[in-house]
Length: 455
Image (spheres, rainbow, N blue to C red):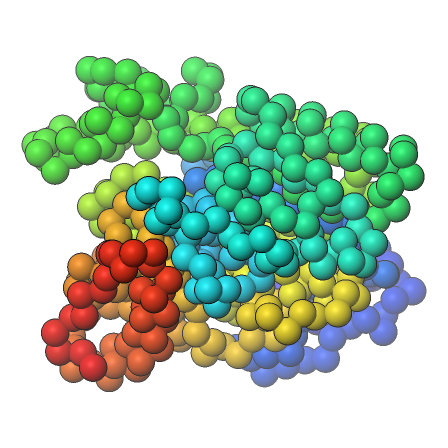
């Protein structure tokens, strides 16, 4: 249904006194200037981020999974705004949460998060770097971050601007309980007339160890001979993958996939319980909620399992679900990126837009915008670029791959040719970013090996 028709139907049922909010018709396929966030009355005041570690986009029912793994998240998605063509800036938590909360690519900030190396080779975010919490704080917001992952914390400098940063032991319920109590105390103390609460959950990160009741289909496959719920065991077999027979590779993947899906069922159930408590406590009454993933998880689609390897879709495709009580539900198929959340929220809350932000308000980007991926992780440096559904992926070891995601969304058919005009166009965008990234590597290693045949 066209958005204007959807809004008209919703208004007829729910809020007939705001008919003037109906959008004019736009040409089919046009994505510029159709704001996807439309409200029946005034926008909400407060903000909740629910970010989930290691959650593959294509495991959500709203994005095509037919197994019914995430019924709660799918329900919330159908009540809110879903971003269909959404990507993260990276494939691991430090890099992806930093760019998301800063509203800009990490290389734009002059900083490249690094997974491996010495302390000197892995610089933290510079002191004084502004984030969403900084700008909201200047506008009178009280903000609390509760993170189950140290990569999003004071340790690495990407929690700057929050009034409180908390690191509870435990899973999603502990994260929520800690955040809810802290915000309750701040509100009661008169410190939080307007507030931002960010809860970051670790489920379903490896090693996958869900409750037994959430492991569905175990009886249909042979068991793996060792306990894959044990993290060292999981990682040891992951690394043995290339030397296994095809039959053993298939069995290992099937067992890990069952456990991973069990983790997804578990976080979905826990989020439903958290949501019900947010509702009961009144936290949802005047609040925008954004649910997003920091990266995905690979299952050997491109030779790796877990994440922080490459920037292919299994690791780097993202989801974002935006919800409030008075938000008009819709799906948005324009090209969006995680760095767009900050400018969208600042605009919505009437906060002046900082000049350093490179993300754009959701709904205002041209259909042919260029979106980047960046990582310095398990396989060294990796850079990617997407434009018009075409994706170029460059490993600093010198390997380049090219995919047409409009017909190959799983990126399985490598079309790379150094003479392809599409490749050359994307390379003209990608190489300068890779050069910028390389200039930020402390000590100069690793350095890009430039591929033969490309300028």
